[in-house]
Each structure stands twice: as structure tokens, then as C-alpha cells.
Length: 332
Ligand code: ADP
Ligand code: MG
Image (cartoon, rainbow, N blue to C red; front, side):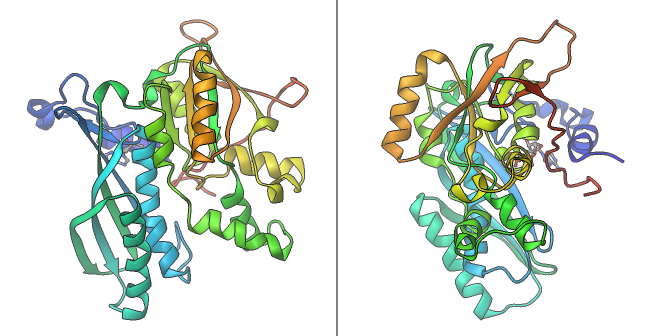
């Protein structure tokens, strides 16, 4: 069976004869990053699409206000990961029925987040069908300041915003895998259902960070995208991954699993030269957002070596935590 990324690469990622006449210009960017970049003046246009499917990305009984919020939040998160400023979005909706009691809070959740980030709904499509929400966002970024996945450099620090793992912990509690105190649930549900896109951070990292992405499928898989595209490896201290008080009171196995491989976090992972540490810490303070150094970018062991993440525990010992990020075509 093909993985999600093999499928994209094999069937949609290769330049075809049909598209040969309309190839990208130097400095533009196609498949493989958080957003595509199309040339513009003075800024490039950053574009990203994300789809949410009932029963796959959310439970059918989820609060519609929260779902409206999350549908746009996951798209704004890709603009943030590119260092792009939101501009507009389109909304394609398949709905089982036209239910005003669902549509009113859904549209309120969607449009209140859009208003906060000054991102205008400019069109879309609506049809009857299994509940599916597909949003395409458009933003702006100066080409030389875009936070691309292929720009990480050897010796860069690796940073994470906010905390990781609460969305995965919430899912595990709902599935009965783990339990938490009742008073911890509202915070976990907030993380799972209403993530905050790190747009201000993405904009602030222009000129400070070399590479960035948002963590949608779990750090272990997502960081590999930066490593593969930049042709470097990484050392990560697994116990330095930032997490909430609720998650830190779980066993270290659960904590490591949720923080390193959880998914649905929508925090930014970025790399930056050591010389920018003070600037990055000042940015985190200005935004009231914790920014944590979790490791370093390493050179490949030799030119033909495979890209890899070397995990260390708190004592600096090398460990093999056998973690796997999320893949939509995986058996799990
Ligand atoms: P993200 O997690 O940032 O939303 P994805 O992991 O979903 O990104 O996708 C990885 C890359 O593959 C992106 O550049 C995305 O635009 C591209 N991609 C995903 N599905 C398709 C498809 N069906 N056709 C073309 N490109 C795709
Ligand atoms: Mg992304």
C-alpha cells in the first residue's frame, strides 16, 4: 500500500508533459511545502488547501462553532508556517442537510476567526453530500522572507511554539486509551477543537528563522519534511518537548508519544541560527507565547547517508523511541 506522501509524489507530484508549458518560475514553489508560492510584486502569493472530513478529522457531534473555527484555523496555520499574512479564503462545503441550527454557529465560528485575522471569504461551492469542509487560503509574503521547508542550515537551533500533545491526549481520553482529571478536560478539548493559528509568530519570524512548518501530523513526521527538503539531519531532546501540566502528569511513555507523534497541534516548528536566540526569545515574550529550543540541525553523516532524527533523553543518552507520525493511508 502507498503512504499518503508516496501517493502524492507518484500521481500528482511529477511534472507532466501537459504542465510542461506552464512550469513554475525561479523563486516560485509548488507541491511539498505548507503553501505554494506564486510570483507577485512586491509580495509572493501564498496558497494552501486543507480539507476536513466528518468521522476522519472530527466527530460528527462536534460543536459546530468550534468546527467552523478549526476549519479555517488549520488553513491559517499553513500561512503562518510560511510567514505569510492572511488575505482571503474560499469555502467548499458538502452538507448532509441544510440545517440552520448547525449552519448558524458553524458560520459564526468560521467568520469570527476570519475577522480576527482580517481574512475575507471571497467565494466557494456548496453541495449536498457527506459533511466535508474544504478551505483554500491566500496570503502574502515577501519572497526572500518566506519560511520554506528547504532552508534549514547545519547548526540551526530547532524551536517549537506553545505546547505539543494535548490534542492527541484529548483524543486518547475520548477513545478510552488514557484518563485525566475531569477539570483538565476543558483545556484538552480546547486544544483539539479550537487550535489558535500562530499567524503573528510566523510574521515575526520573517528574517529570524531559516525554515518552518506547522505540526499537523506529529513532530516526528513533520520535522522529517524539513530534514528531507533541506538534506540535513537533527538531534532532538525528546524530554525537552514542551507540554501542558496535564500532559506532564501522565507517564513518560504517554507524554513522549503525545508530544513527539501526536498530531493536530498546529504549533510551529522552526529552525534558526544561534545568533538569533535573543531575538526569538524577545518575540516570544512580546507575543506571550512560549518558544522552546528542542534540538539542533546536524550535517548528514556522509553525502549518501539517509536523513534522520537522533533522539536524546533528559540525561543526553541516545534512545530509540519508535515513534510514528500520522499518515491518512496507514492501517491505524
Ligand atoms: P500540510 O500538512 O502542510 O497541509 P500536506 O502534508 O497535506 O501539507 O501535503 C504535503 C504537500 O503535498 C503540500 O505541498 C500539498 O499542497 C501537496 N498535496 C497534497 N495533496 C495533493 C494532491 N492531491 N495534489 C497535489 N498536491 C497535493
Ligand atoms: Mg502545514
